Amino acid sequence: MTELVLATKNEGKVREFREILRDLPVEIVSLIDFPDFPEIIEDGRTFEENALKKARALAIFTKDVAIADDSGLVVDALSGSPGVFSARYSGEGATDLKNNLKLLNDLKDVHLKDRGAAFKCAIAVVAPDGFEEVVTGECRGTIGFEMRGNEGFGYDPLFIPNGFDKTFAELGMEVKNRISHRFRAITAVNPVLINQVFRLKAEG
Ligand code: ITT
Image (cartoon, rainbow, N blue to C red):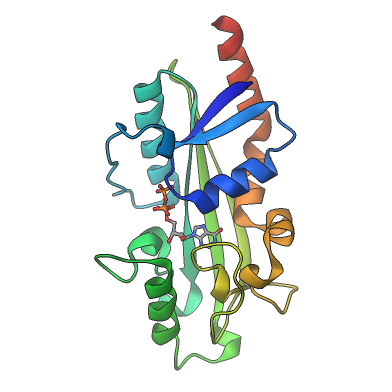
């Protein structure tokens, strides 16, 4: 089966890509299978810039089509923070738990009506022949007052998508993958991806 390399070490992202693209005849592999791939500094100002940087580096490294996902949480009451800094929100040694606790603390005086937020996702597809495409997806919701649920990853235990009264971590992958920022971005990239992967494979 055709292999498609995703420029991530985040297993939560990999699981969601595999599930959302399960009907494509491709096997999604991640950077966990490329231990020699160098660390990429994510210093872009936007999710799109970071996604492109990761995908370009991986396409050069593997000499094959690469996809990258850069994503994060944009909180209205924090003027868009943590945004592109979502992974490192709680500083050195950040973990999902520490990031969630910092977010709860930063919003401790913020009322329900002002706790609006959006998950954003940029996906870049880069081929060694110079082809590049970036698409984005967004999912709006509210930040809860406590962490709830055990599924998903990252900020899922705090994020209640609009139209629901449960967090992504409570709703689980099946619901999340129908409405998430990542699903919306992947849906937008899908035809491009199919085209690129199969054109390059055909060219050998
Ligand atoms: P890679 O760069 O290796 O892909 P990463 O986890 O560092 O992995 P990002 O730089 O894109 O990924 O940072 C994304 C941050 O936003 C990170 O803290 C995630 O936990 C969080 N995040 C992204 N998508 C999410 C989702 O669907 N649910 C919950 N949190 C998410």
